[in-house]
Length: 200
Image (cartoon, rainbow, N blue to C red; front, side):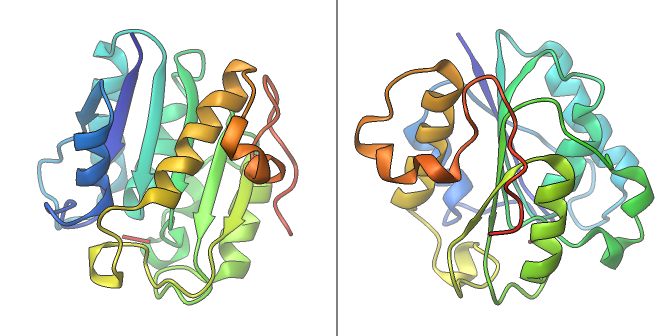
C-alpha cells in the first residue's frame, strides 16, 4: 500500500482546494500538518514533511502546492529511496522567501512533474522552468491559470488527477491508456527527464 503525502502551501488548503478534493478521491492520502500555516519557515516546514516520510507505509507519492513544494523537495533529499514520485504544483519562487540556498541544485532522484501557470503571482514561468530543469522534472505549462488554487477556480481538478495518474502509471511502467496523449510531459519509467525548458 502506497502513501500519498498532500503538502499544502501557506494558509493550508481549504475544503474547496483541489488538494482537499484529491484527498476525497485517492486512497492512502496523508496531509502534512504545519505548526504555523502562516509562517513560511522552510526548515520547520520541511521537518513536518520528513516526519511523515519517516512514518509512511510503502512507497510515497508527494502532491505538493506552492510553498509546500519547497518544503517537499527540501525534505526529500534525505528520503529519495522512499519516494516513488512527486507532483509539484505552482511551486513558490524560493527567491521570494530567501530560501534558494536550502533547495536541491540538482536532480531530485525520483520522477517528478512541475505544473505551472503563465500568470502565477508567486512564480514566473521562466523561474518554474528553471526549477524543473534543475530538478530534472518535466514541466507542464497549463496556461494562464493564476496560482492554481481554489481562488483561481481549482477545486475539483480532473486534469490534475489525470496528470498524477499518468505520473504513477509511467513510474510503474504500465501502459498509459487514456493518458497516452500526456506521455510526452511525463517522466520515463525509472528515469528523470531533462525536459525542463519546453504557488503558496
